[in-house]
Every structure is written in structure tokens, then in C-alpha cells.
Length: 77
Image (cartoon, rainbow, N blue to C red):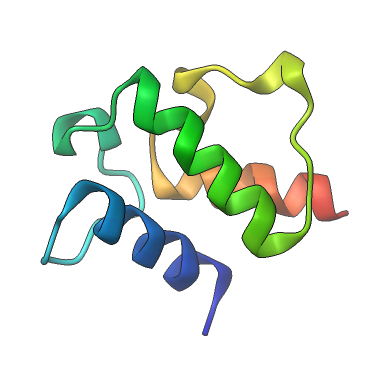
């Protein structure tokens, strides 16, 4: 399973979305708000054993699956 698929699975469970989520689809349009944004970050950090730098922890930096995967790849090196 790819990183993208794992992140999509987390989002589907969190936002109760049954359909596929596009890589560039705005997650705020699916109901992602500031509260579940924090939950999303915690789940991604735990799933991939990474820590995101606080300077990048803004909803706009993680508002699509594509951006989340990109940030994950940068953090993992």
C-alpha cells in the first residue's frame, strides 16, 4: 500500500468519505477543519513515525493529499 493510499484511508475514516479522494481535491471541501486537521497530523506522524516541523503546521500546507504526501516525503528524506 502506498503512502498516498494510507493517508487517503486515514482521511476517509476521519471525514466519513466513502468515495475516492483526488490528490489535489481540497480537504476542507470534504469537511476538514482546524480540529480534525490536528488529529490528521497526529495520525500521519504516528503511522509513518515522523514529526512535522511546527513551522509548517498550517492547514494551507496540508489541504490536499498531494501536499501531505509531498511534505511526508520531504520529512522522510
